[in-house]
Image 1 (cartoon, rainbow over the protein chains, first blue to last red):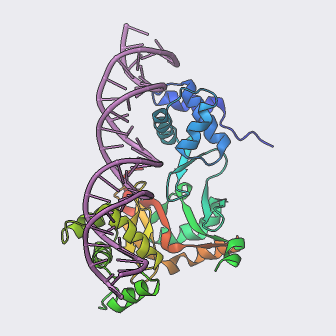
Image 2: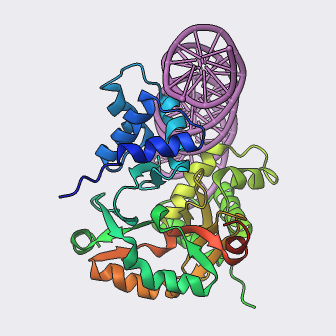
Image 3: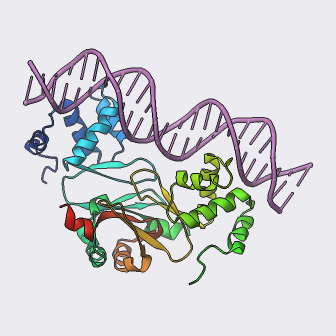
Length: 145
Length: 145
DNA sequence: TTAGTTGCAAATATTTTGCAACCGC
DNA sequence: GCGGTTGCAAAATATTTGCAACTAA
């Protein structure tokens, strides 16, 4: 099983190339996103504070913004509330969120190929990595009408 | 050209059937959503205050919630910020939002049929009326790479 | 050294809630 | 009149910003 975490060289280089600095906070926050899978800024904060309690919320917001600009993380809206961040390791995927059980399903982007084709016909190029589809999973669809 | 606004009888009945009351605020807010097309709670507030300046933000939030419960309006996330509400008159549609020019394109739900089929194969039933796809329109795709 | 970063506090922005007055039915 | 609604103020959330101290390079 391959190690899916970002290779150190990757993001360190990515930061420097844009004139950004490599700080322990940034390293911690990127790791937290990697490990948490899908996490809101608040959840990321809680996680990194377990290691360095002085890390501040504003640092998390600013860092997530930088990491997203570098393409190391992405965010999607998995609830009507806060955005959730996820690492860009692995394949591009979009999300299905079940309103019944709250379950989040990651689906490989290629599954949306037919949809991408339709949108392409409308002259639109979708950003699948940001896409979230709300609805109901099979289990919940059967349960509550 | 048909009148797409909600027929008075429609929503008045809808309200009463659930034990809700028909108030001028609710009528104004529903009209505002109808007329604005896509609007945030804030925009709806500004609009209705042009008619009745005493209407309060909390009334707008509470009313939009009621109207959505009744199926008279729906909301989608057309920006990373506030939700935007639209009337459910006309056909069910989803939205395309261009990150380049900010343009919002409404697309009839049937265009997503192939996508719905794929998701169905995964046991998932999407709520297309809530779906928003971010990306780039043809014009902007050509412009900035 | 020096310009990018961080922590902290305060400012914004958004949405929610308690409650007394109000009003649709 | 009863009970759902509203306006208002305050509270709860969420995110952003100014700035002095700090630090990676």
